[in-house]
Length: 267
Length: 358
Image (tube, rainbow over all chains, first blue to last red; front, side, top):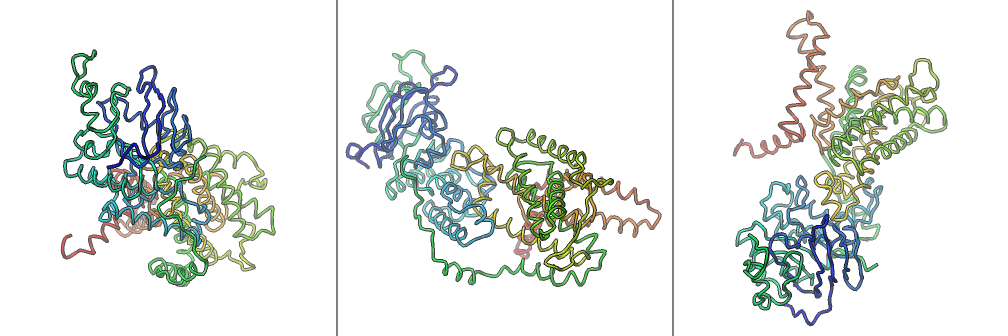
């Protein structure tokens, strides 16, 4: 476990609001993610968790508020720019290249790091071959780390769902991100697969010092994995702290169990 | 801006002599090597003029055109029915260079013609930024008709010839006359071999990976940092470069004389059929598809004569061909979108474990 109070903030969300055609998805949200921690975002469906990740890596532009990543303030950013700055991410519904093999999918995460030009690649010049070999080595390391070697050339579309999630993690990981955003990395998995995925996330965090922000519904998994939990409900923050603090927070219990004092009871 | 994110180990540069040693140590590609030895060394001696002229040269040119379209459609996922239009650009541009810059050697004129076609492809690829799928296909259809019209309407392109046709002013490479069937065959084969090797390098490398990523899911490609619009336009340009050179070879190495109507919409469909039957997203598939489409008519007329004698009407056989092609295309689209290349691979894989499980 990390000690959140010891490290400097890598990401600050400052009073961020986002709405779609008048419907508030996130309103006045602020929290801090510290370098090297695993921060879990939890909350009921429609609480704005995925929207928040989309704001963080530039898929959506917030209506107001600001983000600070590694000391640099930003609001409108393109996903490409976010990736360049070192923010990697995976998606809730896997966004993989289905007809490409596992190795090629992982390698595609390095696209923006390619330095050799079109003609060098077309003519197979030594520089292009050298880069291809270096990329391939990195990809092999990534496959080894995530225990995916057995499926190196299998088209991703034919893999089991849990393995696909791992391939997507590999594609984000190979570029060496400093902040990794994982949107429900364990959705639709059985207990064994969840344990395995938790192990990989922990290992990435430990071996590479990667800061992780993840969305997860399984409270048991979240409590074991992360030292810092942020709870969202209706686009607002209702809890922020260690798992124990959050668990004891009456607002969080209300959000999850639909307590009587809250108006607009949910199903 | 902040520091760039770095891959896990960022050292790619190696001394040049290491690279040379590595080239020497690389395993020799026996399969393609053997094919080239047969194609360059044996076929020009074994095949008679009829085979070179009527079968091998058009087969090679159609393979090249298929390769061009496959880079765009099979690898990048942008369907085009304007292939013949870009072939026409290559043919007429090469003709203009040969005619108006007499000092330019034929290989350079081909290259320049290809470059002009690439430019045309780039321009017609610009809408791919906004338009997808069926509607993009319609813009390539517009390109087809527009280009055909341009090369009919403006006499400058065919040097004001009353027939509206172009033909090769001279066919020589480094002082050697190559206007005979053997010479034209070797020219075509050399160009096709070189461009196939380049296509192989491209699809195996980062460029090809970006293309297939766009084909499979362009939104995801954009989010992980692939410049989708740029790589789509690049695919249009490279594809048209290949098609342009194929168009020039079609005119100067095969037909001898051509007009805009040699590159009509039927030619575009023929090339599309080659990649559907041969295999989308496969380099070998273009050659298999082109061989199929060039040999099937021959086979059918031979079989027709053998079975029915000389009584059968050649017109009937042509109709029969069209029916068979139509049925095959439907069958491939439904049953095996990756074409004959995929079927052959699967067959080979089964054969490798044959006694165990077939």
